[in-house]
Picture (cartoon, rainbow, N blue to C red):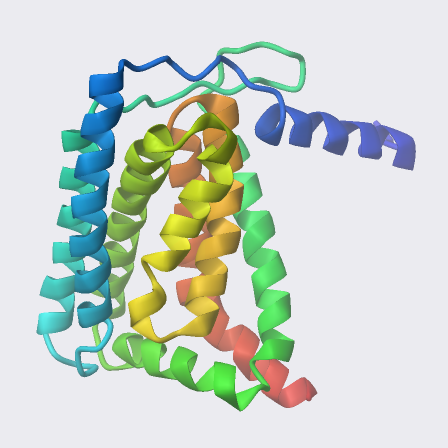
Length: 248
């Protein structure tokens, strides 16, 4: 069946409304004591996790300590997430309005879309030495390490980050700040790494997954988006930077 431009535009509009705009269910109301507990646990976990992340990414490339340190960061995020209170998997709304989806396909499409934007941007931004240098330093861990282990750790950290930032942190925020606030705190957690583009990526990813969290009421969709984006960047960003070097 042939789809014209109008039909395509309607399909895209319906998809983005279902995945990023229309809530499947309202956010549960928590008691003051539950909210207080979340905020205390989130605050402690954030300080520990951000400090550990900065230390982990400053480990010399090729050292096994890097793997241990990054897994330690994931443990901090996961423990903080589950200790803060209940977490929900969430449900998604289909384009037809049904509320029985798991948001996995939506997460894959949204994460892939963000990945495509970042890869295209990397071809240009990668030519700015002040921004390119810290990224190259970060990717030395991949060049000197085992790519399979690095990919596994990237996936584990992605899951744990979403459990914490779109689970615990999001739930601890006032309703009007739930998306922006959780994204800003996620961005702040990367400040000690000294990689400006990593902080910018955290902000963009945090806003996207925060919107998903708002719509689905859970962390499954954000996890899929995060994994799609982060693993795609791990394997494809070096190639995008090389293409940019040739083009420019």
